[in-house]
Image (cartoon, rainbow, N blue to C red; front, side, top):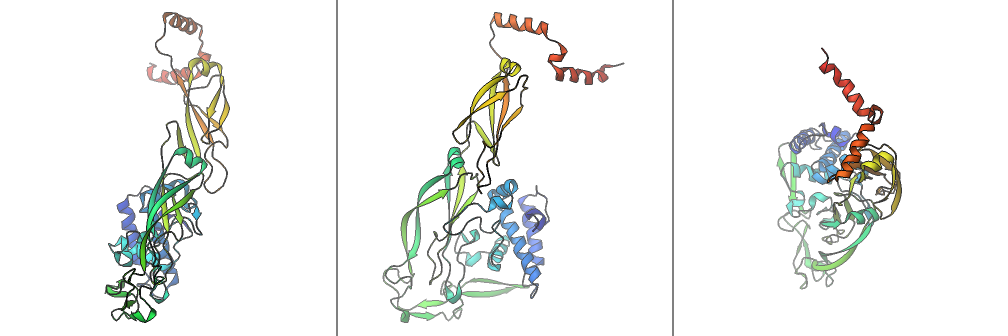
Length: 389
């Protein structure tokens, strides 16, 4: 499969407006209702929808640009993993693609009941009127060191759970449930808009396809009650800012026997005062004195994993030179080795010199030759052409 930018036919630097415009055009061209009986068009529709789902999200687009689809897969937890709607093998169903399509055209997936519909788990219809529970999204902030080593965080969430009194039925017994006459048990009502039809949740039964005639007193017919619980989130080593983890089944309980939604965990990594990360590589600025740069020296430098390593600064090292320490960067979040630690040399010019220090520097300057400054010599050789007659 081509990359997401090629799929939508836009440049990598395209604006959000250009991406949305390109998606709308391609989605209309290959929409299933316009290409009935054409499986190739249906597959293309899912591909362009997946591409738009990623590129229209600032965080996921940044991760995709830096790591590709591999980065979007994140780290699965609780039986399923990765980014919903992008990078995890594509959209698994046409419903996901249609939900993205309606969002791009101002519609709302699942009747607009859940702000999490576009995270791939909100109110999905199951056979017999059952619906998947709403998926939830939270943000967890971790330190740079925790991202390097991995960590475990405990969070408190309030979810809908199956009512203990009626076991999620919503009624005192099965005899207290009747088929909805508005949607004829489908849970959806349909409206034709041009060449395609739009579906929305039945306003009378709430999408269940059933009406409760003898409701449970505990949950008032909802089949679910709210419950606050604490869960532990295992964050793997190597996660980066903007990555998303998926915890399957940790969202709201499903409706009418449907599966529970999922919990999506967006990761925010605090910036470090010394280290800068680029992919799995880590950069560190190392100040050295003029004498150390000229004569060479050995330095002990820290690594992102809290270790230390001995670094040889060669004689004649110039300002800005990068020295690489292999395998001492961030661990790859997918377990594919480690990045490198790159030491950026910063030669510090001495300040607040004493008279004796200035005298010594003048004496040193008098002993210098062009060979001591090859770059300076080369520069002035190039400049001669501008001053020749």
